Length: 120
Length: 110
Image 1 (spheres, each protein chain N blue to C red):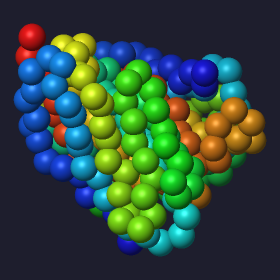
Image 2 (cartoon, chains in turn brown, purple):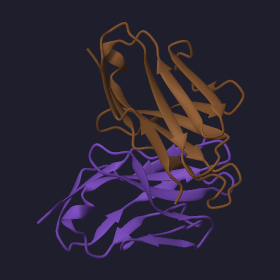
Image 3 (cartoon, rainbow over the protein chains, first blue to last red):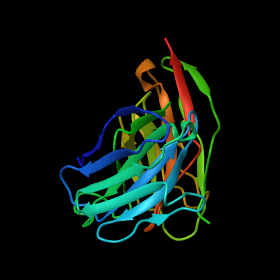
């Protein structure tokens, strides 16, 4: 099946530093990737939609200057949490959609394993 | 807008019990419907999917039928195992995004 990886799986950083999380589609091309945030015992909250070669589309209430998204290629999107604070601690999950829908529905998303961010 | 309403948990069952987790969705357009499962500390895994009315998705003993008349996609399993303990998310797909239900925590006791 389609595989999406995330790196790192866990990261602990000091308040005020920036953290970059990578999301890769390993065996398919993804013009669109999605970034979610999940709070404990809560559903996934869509933060932004990342489009290859163009600016990301952010959901209402998500600070685009704080959560920088770059989708430089058909297999890689990055999320950078800038000047992280303890309230940014969360589980961040990315997903990717198969651009051509050759092995999946056009609206199906494949999820990465998530990144646990802890800001001290 | 698009929405998914999912049965609130937590749900606790004994091993071999029958499971139903209810899910209803808004009927605009012709969405695909999904069930995802999330094991502790992990990301989401697709459990099953259905693309049109009356389709039945199935996997690992779980089933869900796309019911257009009741706008439902209830998840069922005839005999749960301890290893099925996880959080289950119902989702509705569109060209733009997936819309998730709130998730249902399932705990299966031996």
